[in-house]
Length: 319
Length: 251
Image (cartoon, rainbow over all chains, first blue to last red; front, side):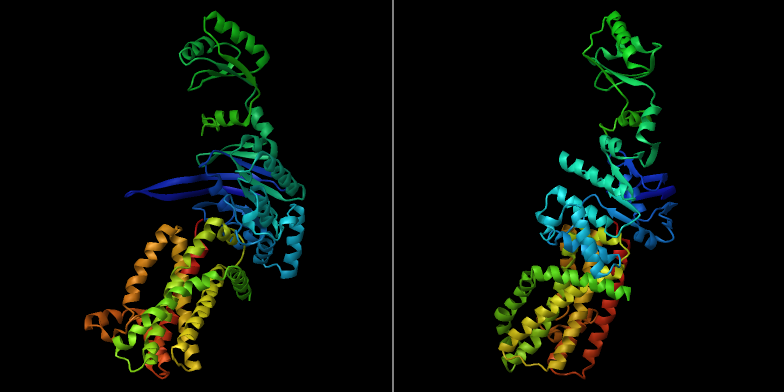
């Protein structure tokens, strides 16, 4: 459905007299299959939105190619526009218009006739449970209602692919859960959904496949399960005072069951082991033997954050 | 065909929103009405005009051109609000014509200007201004072309600077000298030679002269076709440039 090869974009930014070139996206290769929810996971500033805006024809790539729903992004952006829907991050509705007016107008911008546009708007309003508020001005809507209008706008012309830029940012937990259901419904209706997110749980729970992006590059790609499996085994978090951490690291480094050891800046260790249940008693014995006092010990299954950490050396929560 | 339909679509939407909040048309006309009521009566003695009506024939056309210039130049603010709301971005992912996105909005501005011009003209009639209807319609055409140009330029600049804080001083800096060098408030016939020399390079000064000739009933004057030609060419250039900004603008 989407295939990109070496997509690049850099921006010139000026700080005082110096102009700096920032490489926002440095050669992205992606393959998105039909009918999947594909997630772009990464910290703010990783280049997710820039990539999305290139794919949605809003900014022109500096280099690379992309085929989107069978249309060539560089040669025929007009055709790409007809086949995709795009829901921007910062909203797209006008305060003084009603949801129905916005939907009819947006459908007509795609060349759809007036009567057809009105029918589509009515159907979309019903599907997104907005009929009750359809003729009120957008400025009276709650955050969740407004986001639903915006998604309805993005798919009013029944595109093959819809791009959703951070669709749940700023929503309360309940609206967020509703939004996940809406997004799954789009996929079940046969649409390919491409979302960006910086929420780990969202990428994990919602996406069929994800690409992890950092610093303008895709650092990992696969299903959430595959990516987590790559980090074989479990993670044991050992809570220690800052002062005791180096000694503990020395004591545990080289133990046969520790595959990898990382020191946390604020004290404590992160141990990658094959089997957490057997490793923990050994860790306890070793530290006790070395006379080091333990604050806490925790076992957890690898998360996407661990994937991010192993690929980039940083935690997504910190960045 | 598609272009005409797209333009009509945007125009309709903009007019609908304008009618929902028509107070802005009247706010826009407030200042010129004040000039008409509180400043124009000083003109008969100042201009040495034989009658009040003669003074109005000089002053009202200038006032209308002023309204067209300023009304147009400040339309960019509305566009920045639309940019911020994401409405422009949402439009730009659809296959709608980029020129239509601009022209639909600028035509709304032209219509709102003409409504304001009619209000001013009607008020001026109360002060014994008399103008032949054919001449008046041609004068309105001139005003429409000016408003088309200034609003298009304002939209183009708004897309480039993307912030009200930058747009306001920029528009004021442009508008002030243009205003003073166009003989809007007082005819430049009073000006010293050097000032007239500069004013000859100001296209709005030609527009004001043309409009004044029309209000004077001097349809055959060269100033009429010169003014119309200059404003038409500039309006076309302004629209062309601004439409390109709509096509390429980022965010």
